[in-house]
Structures are given as C-alpha cells and as structure tokens.
Image 1 (cartoon, protein in one colour):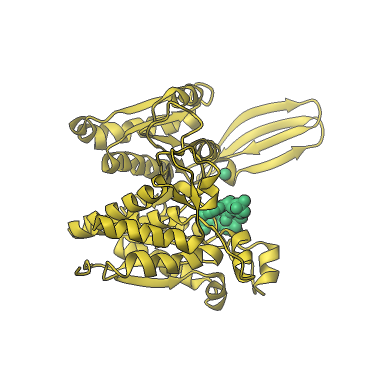
Image 2: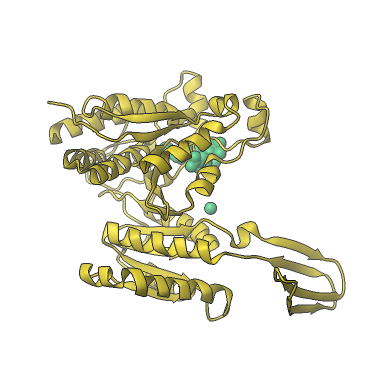
Amino acid sequence: MEKIKMTTPLVELDGDEMTRILWQEIKDELLLPFVELKTEYYDLGLPNREATGDQVTVDAANAIKKYGVGVKCATITPNAQRVEEYKLSQMWKSPNGTIRAILDGTVFRAPIMVKGISPVVKNWKAPITIARHAYGDVYKASELRVTGPGKAELVFTAENGEETRRTIFEFAGPGVLQGQYNKDDSITSFARACFQYAVDSRQDLWFSTKDTISKQYDHTFKDIFAAIYEKEFKARFEQLGLTYFYTLIDDAVARVIRSKGGFIWACKNYDGDVMSDMVSTAFGSLAMMTSVLVSPDGNYEYEAAHGTVTQHYYRHLKGEETSTNSVATIFAWTGALAKRGELDGLPGLTEFAGKLERAAVATIEGGVMTKDLAGLWEGGQPARAVNSLEFIRAVRATLEGLL
Ligand code: NAP
Ligand code: MG
C-alpha cells in the first residue's frame, strides 16, 4: 500500500514518562507504516524544557499559531518533588497553561464510547462534550480572611479617577471575602469557540450559568453568548438543524442526567472543572477522554485528557510489564491528522484517521484491552487484558484489516 501523503506539517509536541513511551510506539506501529508523516517536532519533555529555559514550549505554541494544528503528549507540570527529581533550575510553569495563554482558547473534552463499557448513567447513548472556559473567575480571584468587625466594599477606579462603590457586607465578626473578574474579550472568544465547535461537530450547544442570582456577572456571559449567536451563528445553526439552548446551571444538571447525550455543554471555568470530572467518571475512564483546545482564530491543539501516568512509568523503568491505555493518545493523533486533512483538502488523510479510531474502538469491542478497561468490561466474551505494546499491536492488526 502506498503511504498517505501530507502537505502541511503537523506540530508535534512530545512529552514525558509513560505517555512518551506510548507516543513513540503509536508512531512506529500505527502512523509511520501508513502515513508519510510530516511533523515539526518540539520536545516538551521536562529535560528539554529545562535545557531550553522553557523556550521550547513557547516556540511550540507559536508553531501551532503558524500551522494551525498541533498534537501534544502529556507533560509533567513540575512541583517541588519534580524539581528535585529532575534537578531543575526553576519550577517551570504548566506547559498547558503557557500554550493556552498564547493561543487563548476553550478546552473541549469528550468521552470515547465503546460497546461493552457502559456509562453509569444508563440513558446516555452518545458522548457529552464539556466546553470549559479556561480563563478567570475563581481561578484568578483575590481573597481575604476577615478577622473582625468592619465594612467590606467593592471599589472600581476608572482611568479618569472616577470611583464606583458597592457595599458587600457589614461584618459584625470574622468571615471571608473574595473578588473575581472576567473580561468581555475572553467571554466573547469562549462563545465563538463553542458555536464554531458545534458547527464543526454538528452538535447542539447548551450553555448554563447562574444568571438569576448573579445578575451582572453571569448575566454578562449569557448576554454575550446570545449576541454572538444572533450576529454570527444563527443562520448557520438553522441551516444545519442545530439548536442553541441556554438554561440555568441547576436546570442543566437535571437535564444532562436525563438526556441521551450527543451535545456540547458549555460551562464557566469552575462549572467546567467540576462537571468534566463528573461526566468523564460517569462515562467510564479518564483514559477514554479526548481533549482539544480550540483558539478563537481557528487553531487546534489535540491531546489526551490524562497525565503522564507516572506510576506505570516507574514500573516500566524497573523492567516490569505495564498495561497503560493508549486510546486517548491515539485519538489525539487522529483528531489532529483528520483536522490537517480537512484544512489541506486531503480526504485520504482524514479517512485514515477515522479508520484508526474505528480500529482502536473495534479492538476493545472485540475483547482486547488494557487492564484499566478490563475491570469495567461487561461485553459478551471475557476481556483479554494485554500489555501496553500488545494493545497497540492489536490495534494495528485491526487497522490493517480495515485499510
Ligand atoms: P495521571 O497521569 O492521569 O494518572 C493518574 C492515574 O490514573 C494513574 O496512576 C492510573 O491509575 C490512571 N490512568 C491515567 N491515565 C491512564 C492510562 N492512559 N491508562 C491507564 N491508567 C491511567 O495523573 P497524575 O498521576 O495526577 O499525574 C502524573 C503527571 O502528569 C504529573 O506530573 C502531572 O503534572 C501530569 N499531568 C499532565 C497533564 C497534561 O499534560 N495534560 C494532565 C494531568 C497531569 P493506576 O495507577 O491506578 O493504574
Ligand atoms: Mg478538575
């Protein structure tokens, strides 16, 4: 079979630990034999971030801006223990944080569903995608411990010196205070990314906040979404038969649980943090969750939702066998290749990505899977739990049958 050609390079961001091992095996077994893979490679492994003073992360993010599509391996976010372990000169920032700050975007997370592993919520038949605004609110709040009686005020000083004041509370005793913010710019790009993703993936969009209680803050989110929808997306939604639906967060929670799935649920930063963990757990496993960062100017970065699976890596280093699930990392590659194919007008590449996804799913549905899934398996035949490389090779065998 002739290898599939690519025209524009995919920005490849390599990473750390067990996922770095899987990364290479996926390339060797599932990509290089079939695709004339064209990538611009950035090594975001912690040793190279240290060697380059983290410049490599910035360069990789800029390359995604240049070419439009990147695929990222999970990376270590250093803490004190990692500084020691890797003899780091600094506690380098989270690569995802750095990349997000440069690309400015929204994170979409969706479960990969397979027959034989059923969601805890029985009526969920199709994936629920969470779109999380990844800027501001409680994550950038200023907090104060109030130690005794006094008056708390909200004060805004305009550039011309004019002050706006609100009394928050007259404290008679100790308590707590918090001030948070967001920007119209960021909310607008969040809204655009959600509507665009709904159009691209042909799914309805739900958005929820608590605007009945938060009449200025959350209401601003609701108003900006409504305005962007009316101005930029309504016609396209109607043409495609899609729905945009706004409701209160508590109503949304009840409706999501009763739903069949198959839509995007856009959430503010904190709601998205909490709800994405609930949704992914209810669907089965973090190792079966895709994640893509979509920037307002149409750049895409695909990754797995899980981390570098450190405990498995330490076992691998000791020469022990591992059974690490590579599905989310495979889907990061297929998502990126399919998008590259779509942007470059290479249907063969997009088709290959689709077949590789089907091969991964079909392999599991055929009863061959890693240990994490074997424990959840309810399929007809007994599950055969295989090691990390055996699973990838089994996917290759299924893929060769499909090609
Ligand atoms: P993790 O790597 O996601 O792993 C947590 C646990 O979840 C694992 O020990 C394993 O459980 C299970 N698991 C996760 N992915 C799996 C897979 N593909 N196959 C099988 N089991 C899987 O999270 P972590 O241990 O909290 O973090 C490890 C490192 O990853 C940290 O240095 C962190 O900074 C980094 N991290 C990076 C990203 C990213 O780059 N996007 C995201 C999160 C964390 P068992 O051990 O029970 O098998
Ligand atoms: Mg969380």
